[in-house]
Image (cartoon, rainbow, N blue to C red; front, side):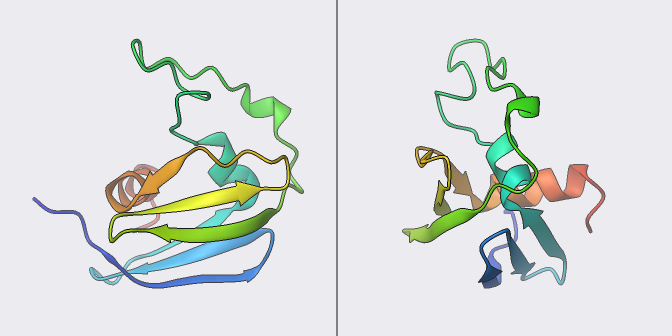
Length: 103
């Protein structure tokens, strides 16, 4: 089954963003939350899948300075800590939201 696509992505404040999906669900993520789940190779071991980023090292008041669409499949976020290597695919974000009970 194909994951829903975003209809609207709103970054009205630097501390969070909201995604409204084609299935009617809505995902709201703080910048800190998004940074903690970053799927990049710096944050998750590519071979074992073990998360290497200590989530406690991310401050609650972290902001994002830039959110860029990558093709028709992902977002690239630049955080205030200068981290910007993660690609947050639509399926990754939607599956994460479902796992958090955000449907």
